[in-house]
Structure formats: structure tokens, C-alpha cells
Image (cartoon, rainbow, N blue to C red; front, side, top):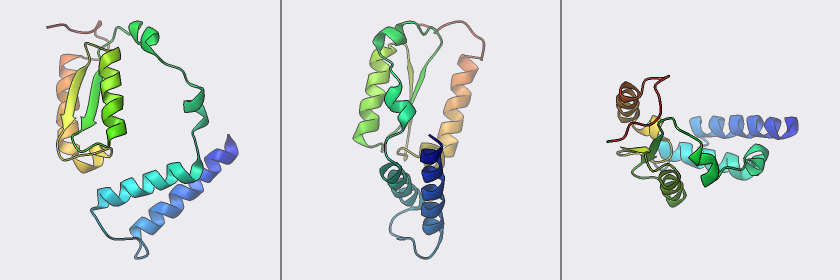
Length: 135
């Protein structure tokens, strides 16, 4: 595990340095370049061991009674759209926050929309509140 973390740190550092330097391919927005960097990190570091070993399914979701917020950028890649649909199928009472003009890096691409969405959500569901609120 330590060797894997070392590879992640080294590759991430290298890729971010390239992104911020003149050696970086300057095509696209900073967010697009960040997405290419994060994809490169995932490809070069291989699968994440903890994620491969983690199991979670509908029966696990049934035991969760707290409110759930599903957040998705409206320009997200299909795999994230599919993940969002899965979350909503497991958590029928989940609220959905669609972040405009954003993909996977929604907190970078549209921080105001994310911030306002989270503020609204936590105003409706203060930490420590009982389970989901139904309409």
C-alpha cells in the first residue's frame, strides 16, 4: 500500500507540475487540463486497492436512514451519470443537485453553484437531524 501511495504522490506531483508549466498541453480550459491530469494519475497508478475490496449494494443502502445528496455536473462523463442514477436507485429519497457548466471537477468548475447547493441542502438537513424528510 505504501508503494502505491508513493507512486500516486510522485505521479500527481509530476502531472500537476507539467500542467502548470509551459510543457503542458495548453489546449482547453484549466478544468479540462485538470481532468486530463486526474485521468492520467488513475491510469498510471493502477486500480485503487481499497475501492476494489469495498462492497456496497442495495441491502447496505437500505440501512441508511440519513438524508442523501446526489451531486452531478451537467457536463459529467457517462460513467458519472450512470453512478448518479445508481445512487438514486439505491436511495429513492436522495435529493439531486445538478451543477450547471461543470463535469467531474464541479467544485473547481462552478464553486458558487456547488456552495449554494450545499448550503441549501444543509439548511434543510442540519447535521444531527433525523432521517430523510419526505414531501
